[in-house]
Image 1 (cartoon, helix red, strand yellow):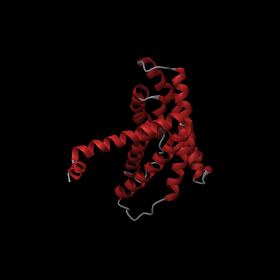
Image 2: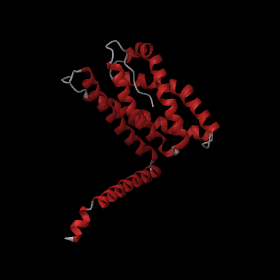
Image 3: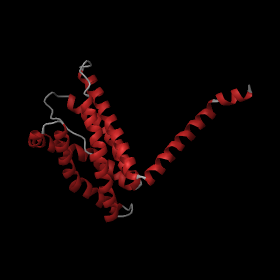
Image 4: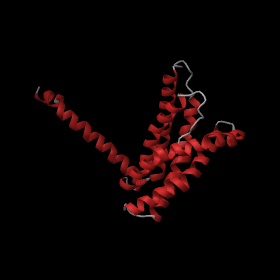
Length: 209
Protein backbone atom coordinates (compact mmCIF):
# COMPACT_ATOMS: atom_id res chain seq x y z
CA UNK A 1 0.00 0.00 0.00
CA UNK A 2 2.81 2.40 0.87
CA UNK A 3 4.57 1.57 -2.39
CA UNK A 4 1.38 2.29 -4.32
CA UNK A 5 0.98 5.66 -2.61
CA UNK A 6 4.66 6.40 -3.27
CA UNK A 7 4.24 5.67 -6.99
CA UNK A 8 1.17 7.90 -7.22
CA UNK A 9 2.82 10.82 -5.44
CA UNK A 10 2.50 13.60 -8.03
CA UNK A 11 5.76 15.48 -7.38
CA UNK A 12 7.66 12.20 -7.65
CA UNK A 13 5.96 11.39 -10.96
CA UNK A 14 6.87 14.85 -12.23
CA UNK A 15 10.51 14.35 -11.26
CA UNK A 16 10.51 10.94 -12.96
CA UNK A 17 9.06 12.43 -16.15
CA UNK A 18 11.71 15.15 -16.17
CA UNK A 19 14.43 12.54 -15.62
CA UNK A 20 13.10 10.45 -18.50
CA UNK A 21 13.06 13.45 -20.81
CA UNK A 22 16.60 14.34 -19.85
CA UNK A 23 17.59 10.74 -20.51
CA UNK A 24 16.04 10.87 -24.00
CA UNK A 25 17.76 14.19 -24.69
CA UNK A 26 21.07 12.74 -23.52
CA UNK A 27 20.62 9.75 -25.83
CA UNK A 28 19.78 12.07 -28.71
CA UNK A 29 22.84 14.22 -27.99
CA UNK A 30 25.06 11.14 -27.86
CA UNK A 31 23.67 9.88 -31.17
CA UNK A 32 24.16 13.34 -32.67
CA UNK A 33 27.79 13.42 -31.61
CA UNK A 34 28.45 9.86 -32.84
CA UNK A 35 26.58 10.10 -36.16
CA UNK A 36 25.88 13.79 -36.86
CA UNK A 37 24.80 13.62 -40.50
CA UNK A 38 22.38 10.63 -40.30
CA UNK A 39 20.77 11.99 -37.13
CA UNK A 40 20.37 15.45 -38.66
CA UNK A 41 18.91 13.91 -41.83
CA UNK A 42 16.25 12.06 -39.86
CA UNK A 43 15.53 14.95 -37.48
CA UNK A 44 15.26 17.53 -40.25
CA UNK A 45 12.97 15.31 -42.30
CA UNK A 46 10.64 14.69 -39.37
CA UNK A 47 10.49 18.36 -38.39
CA UNK A 48 9.98 19.63 -41.96
CA UNK A 49 7.31 17.02 -42.64
CA UNK A 50 5.55 17.83 -39.37
CA UNK A 51 5.80 21.53 -40.13
CA UNK A 52 4.05 21.02 -43.45
CA UNK A 53 1.26 19.05 -41.75
CA UNK A 54 0.76 21.96 -39.35
CA UNK A 55 0.83 24.42 -42.27
CA UNK A 56 -1.86 22.59 -44.20
CA UNK A 57 -4.13 22.17 -41.18
CA UNK A 58 -3.74 25.82 -40.19
CA UNK A 59 -4.24 27.05 -43.75
CA UNK A 60 -7.40 24.97 -44.11
CA UNK A 61 -8.77 26.18 -40.77
CA UNK A 62 -8.07 29.88 -41.35
CA UNK A 63 -9.45 29.85 -44.89
CA UNK A 64 -12.59 28.08 -43.67
CA UNK A 65 -12.14 25.30 -46.21
CA UNK A 66 -12.03 22.50 -43.69
CA UNK A 67 -13.10 19.92 -46.27
CA UNK A 68 -10.17 20.71 -48.54
CA UNK A 69 -8.30 17.44 -49.14
CA UNK A 70 -5.03 16.98 -47.36
CA UNK A 71 -2.06 16.98 -49.78
CA UNK A 72 -0.04 13.97 -48.64
CA UNK A 73 2.50 14.25 -51.46
CA UNK A 74 3.27 17.83 -50.44
CA UNK A 75 4.24 16.55 -46.99
CA UNK A 76 6.38 13.88 -48.62
CA UNK A 77 8.15 16.53 -50.69
CA UNK A 78 8.85 18.69 -47.64
CA UNK A 79 10.11 15.65 -45.72
CA UNK A 80 12.49 14.81 -48.56
CA UNK A 81 13.63 18.43 -48.75
CA UNK A 82 14.30 18.46 -45.02
CA UNK A 83 16.27 15.24 -45.07
CA UNK A 84 18.24 15.43 -48.30
CA UNK A 85 18.45 19.15 -49.08
CA UNK A 86 18.28 21.20 -45.89
CA UNK A 87 20.09 18.91 -43.42
CA UNK A 88 23.28 18.12 -45.38
CA UNK A 89 23.63 21.67 -46.72
CA UNK A 90 23.19 23.33 -43.32
CA UNK A 91 25.46 20.77 -41.64
CA UNK A 92 28.25 21.64 -44.09
CA UNK A 93 27.59 25.38 -44.07
CA UNK A 94 27.48 25.79 -40.29
CA UNK A 95 30.67 23.77 -40.01
CA UNK A 96 32.41 26.05 -42.50
CA UNK A 97 31.16 29.16 -40.74
CA UNK A 98 32.49 27.96 -37.39
CA UNK A 99 35.88 27.33 -39.00
CA UNK A 100 36.00 30.73 -40.69
CA UNK A 101 34.78 32.65 -37.64
CA UNK A 102 35.38 30.54 -34.52
CA UNK A 103 34.15 31.44 -31.06
CA UNK A 104 31.06 33.20 -29.78
CA UNK A 105 32.37 36.72 -29.45
CA UNK A 106 30.19 39.51 -30.78
CA UNK A 107 32.55 40.05 -33.72
CA UNK A 108 32.52 36.38 -34.72
CA UNK A 109 28.74 36.10 -34.38
CA UNK A 110 28.13 39.23 -36.46
CA UNK A 111 30.49 38.03 -39.20
CA UNK A 112 28.79 34.64 -39.30
CA UNK A 113 25.40 36.31 -39.40
CA UNK A 114 26.36 38.60 -42.29
CA UNK A 115 27.76 35.73 -44.36
CA UNK A 116 24.81 33.50 -43.50
CA UNK A 117 22.03 35.95 -44.32
CA UNK A 118 23.49 38.07 -47.12
CA UNK A 119 25.69 35.54 -48.96
CA UNK A 120 24.33 32.08 -48.20
CA UNK A 121 20.59 32.72 -47.68
CA UNK A 122 19.81 34.15 -51.16
CA UNK A 123 21.62 31.27 -52.88
CA UNK A 124 20.00 28.71 -50.58
CA UNK A 125 16.55 30.18 -51.20
CA UNK A 126 16.95 29.96 -54.97
CA UNK A 127 18.08 26.34 -54.63
CA UNK A 128 15.24 25.50 -52.25
CA UNK A 129 12.51 26.98 -54.43
CA UNK A 130 13.95 25.47 -57.61
CA UNK A 131 14.30 22.00 -56.11
CA UNK A 132 10.83 22.07 -54.58
CA UNK A 133 9.29 23.21 -57.88
CA UNK A 134 11.11 20.37 -59.65
CA UNK A 135 9.79 17.84 -57.13
CA UNK A 136 6.30 19.18 -57.86
CA UNK A 137 6.88 18.15 -61.48
CA UNK A 138 6.92 21.72 -62.77
CA UNK A 139 10.55 22.64 -63.51
CA UNK A 140 9.44 24.94 -66.33
CA UNK A 141 7.78 27.19 -63.72
CA UNK A 142 11.01 27.82 -61.79
CA UNK A 143 11.72 31.23 -63.44
CA UNK A 144 8.14 32.43 -62.79
CA UNK A 145 8.22 31.24 -59.19
CA UNK A 146 11.51 32.97 -58.51
CA UNK A 147 10.34 36.15 -60.22
CA UNK A 148 7.08 36.37 -58.24
CA UNK A 149 8.21 35.03 -54.84
CA UNK A 150 11.93 35.56 -54.34
CA UNK A 151 11.93 39.20 -53.19
CA UNK A 152 9.11 38.73 -50.70
CA UNK A 153 10.66 35.48 -49.49
CA UNK A 154 14.10 36.93 -48.84
CA UNK A 155 12.66 39.92 -46.95
CA UNK A 156 10.57 37.56 -44.80
CA UNK A 157 13.65 35.42 -44.34
CA UNK A 158 15.67 38.34 -42.99
CA UNK A 159 12.83 39.39 -40.67
CA UNK A 160 12.65 35.97 -39.04
CA UNK A 161 16.12 34.52 -39.42
CA UNK A 162 18.43 37.42 -38.57
CA UNK A 163 17.36 37.45 -34.88
CA UNK A 164 16.99 33.65 -34.86
CA UNK A 165 20.46 33.07 -36.25
CA UNK A 166 21.93 35.64 -33.88
CA UNK A 167 20.73 33.42 -31.02
CA UNK A 168 21.77 30.28 -32.87
CA UNK A 169 25.36 31.38 -33.49
CA UNK A 170 25.75 32.97 -30.08
CA UNK A 171 24.28 30.38 -27.72
CA UNK A 172 23.69 27.04 -29.53
CA UNK A 173 26.50 24.45 -29.83
CA UNK A 174 27.55 23.80 -33.43
CA UNK A 175 26.31 20.20 -33.24
CA UNK A 176 22.75 21.38 -32.52
CA UNK A 177 22.54 24.43 -34.77
CA UNK A 178 20.78 22.51 -37.57
CA UNK A 179 18.23 21.26 -35.02
CA UNK A 180 17.63 24.82 -33.80
CA UNK A 181 17.15 26.03 -37.39
CA UNK A 182 14.67 23.20 -38.05
CA UNK A 183 12.65 24.06 -34.94
CA UNK A 184 12.47 27.74 -35.92
CA UNK A 185 11.55 26.63 -39.45
CA UNK A 186 8.65 24.58 -38.08
CA UNK A 187 7.06 27.68 -36.57
CA UNK A 188 7.97 29.81 -39.58
CA UNK A 189 5.97 27.43 -41.76
CA UNK A 190 2.89 28.22 -39.67
CA UNK A 191 3.54 31.98 -39.93
CA UNK A 192 3.94 31.83 -43.70
CA UNK A 193 0.82 29.71 -44.00
CA UNK A 194 -1.16 32.34 -42.10
CA UNK A 195 0.24 35.16 -44.25
CA UNK A 196 -0.48 33.30 -47.48
CA UNK A 197 -4.14 32.71 -46.59
CA UNK A 198 -4.86 36.36 -45.75
CA UNK A 199 -5.14 37.15 -49.44
CA UNK A 200 -6.05 34.92 -52.34
CA UNK A 201 -3.66 36.92 -54.52
CA UNK A 202 -0.69 36.59 -52.16
CA UNK A 203 2.27 34.81 -53.81
CA UNK A 204 3.27 31.47 -52.42
CA UNK A 205 6.26 31.79 -50.09
CA UNK A 206 8.46 28.85 -49.25
CA UNK A 207 10.46 28.35 -46.03
CA UNK A 208 14.21 28.83 -45.91
CA UNK A 209 16.13 27.92 -42.73
